[in-house]
Image 1 (cartoon, one colour):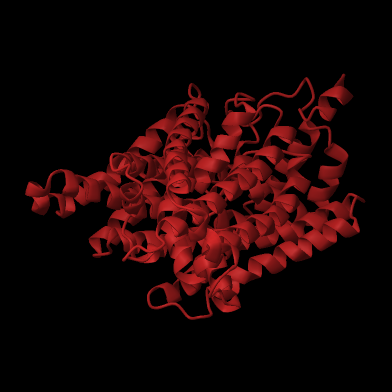
Image 2 (cartoon, helix red, strand yellow):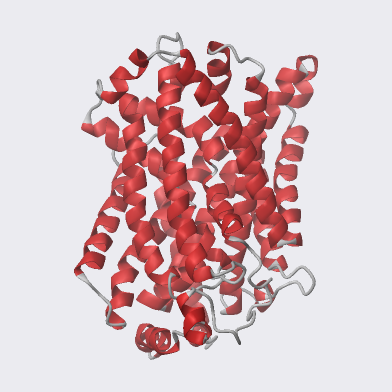
Amino acid sequence: MAANALAAGVPRADAVGAYGLRFRCLSPLEVLAQSIANIAPTACAAAFIPAAFGLAHNGTWLAFVVATIGLILVAFNITQFSRSSASPGSLYSYISMGLGPTLGVISGWGLLAAYLGTAIALTGAVSKISLDALQQTFPSHLQFWQSNLVLYGVATFAVVLPWFVAFRDIRLSAKVMLGMELASVALIVVLAAGIFWKFGFHVYHDQFHLKDVTPGSFCTGLVIAIFCFVGFESATALGEEAKNPLRTIPRAVVLSLLIVGFFYTMMSFAEVGGFTGYETPLDQSDFPFTVLSQRIGMRPLAPLLGIGALISGLGCILACLNAGSRVMFAMGRHGIFYGSVGGAHKKNETPHVAVTLASVVLLAITLVMFRCKFTAKNVLDLASTFATFGFLLVYILISLAAPVYLKRRGRLGAKTIIVSVLGVLFMMIPVVGSFYPLPDAPLRYIPYIFALYILVGVGWMIYQKANSSGIVEKISRDLEGIGSRFGEAKGIVAEAQGAANDEAHT
């Protein structure tokens, strides 16, 4: 019976929740909702497809196709781990298995930067969308809507609402995220269908033939297309709460890429084609969905699409809090943060301290940026760029960790090596694109700020090691526990020991 359970991708029958989180409560659809909500396809379609068009032009659709294929390579490396183990630690735990605790901790800091940075960016986006809607609805009170008090209030609401849901119940979070994304995506699909129905095939001719697309502009647009997918791996943070996690999580990681990749490709054709012949280019439109709704004679759809983008942004903030707090929760259990961060609420069975701490950090940074006269768009641009470096770091490390992990377990093959190398090379495209061509200030300084952030995290770990905090031993014991729960004790315990031995003696 135990063998059948393992074949089905579930822990042994005697396995119970080891972290205090709600055990095996999320369906495959709810786990998939976590990854899709973290991608925020509706918000990205509104904000970043026009930005990608400004660089890739008629090759925008192809940039999203290539981004989907490239990130599937990364997803393949992630599934090498998620098919045999699951925990709240997400890629932080996986990278620790393959490359050892030090690089695992570095990846943990990278994930926190990625998820919280994305949440900050979306808080800026939600604030902008909300204030624009209020100003258009009540133009006679324009001065009031432009006041700092209203800006701070909207930003606070955009964080407090997701915090409350994430604090209360992971099942509630999953249902809210699923409902939000289904509603917002449905509205955009209606818009896309209207565009395809309204305009003839000739408006898509230049896109199919990649007219005026150059390799340099295409690669730069590809960087934006890749960013539109980040967060697809966040279902891995639900390793304790997902039903049949060894099946559900790998499928959610890959399916989220395929579904959203198709959605982005379709919307690229629709948005670029819908703006053909219009006096304002797509990349210079403040909210292209309004223009497109008017051009196809569906003007009442415009405010609904604005609400859909707002809902998608809130769903993404919630998904970031869910994923980021669970990484923080795992790091707290290992002694990287105070022990209380690694505690779970007895009634709600959520990482309540980590959720609250992540929300406080998120809101504080957002309000400080607003106080320093950054506009909502500035917050979106700067925070999303910072978050991108976190994702890139982790995607590169997981691609390097997969073959090391499989080699120690005697399962390394040529296919894995090829996919690992291709995954790393693909991730180098946005890395290079972040430096060349050199962005304008202050975006050009973000890579160095991120590097300093990582150095501080490394310095904190070195300090804790010097004070005999036992971080390496705690991570190793946690990995051993994960292995024994999933019937992979021999393989994963050896993995934990092999990855940590050198560090434990340093």
